[in-house]
Image (cartoon, rainbow, N blue to C red; front, top):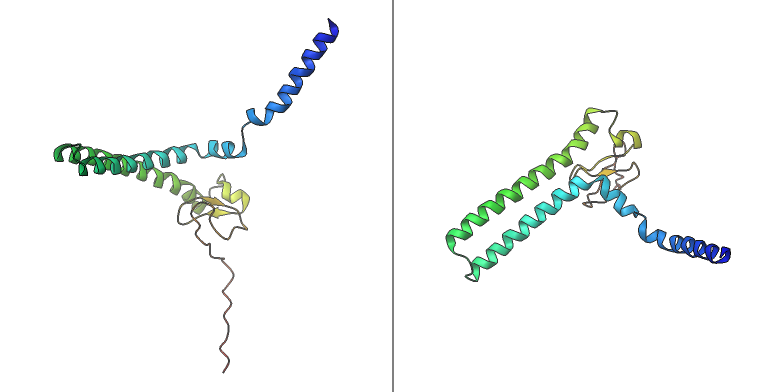
Length: 150
């Protein structure tokens, strides 16, 4: 009886050890949790744009009338614009806090900054934005120029 119980405990511990990487949240999920609002806004914008393309296609093939197309398209454009405006506001907020010198801004603590194109936070050593690919200018360093030899 004791050996059977010990065997079951050993099997359960082995199963948990093997299954732990599958059950534990990944780093990508943790990062996504930090930026869940931005991700949700981006998904909403992409869904609205896809719906606009779908409505346009349905209109071209004759599935919906001109009046229905105009009404649906206006509603979907308004939805996409709201999502885009909310996304822009969410991207501006961290950049504005960093510009204002807010001590709670994460970039101020890490010595990084925010991308001027998309507002994504970057580390001090970064040369390019990891989200949009924009090249960062280095303040304090002037570009080297070669002198033309005469």
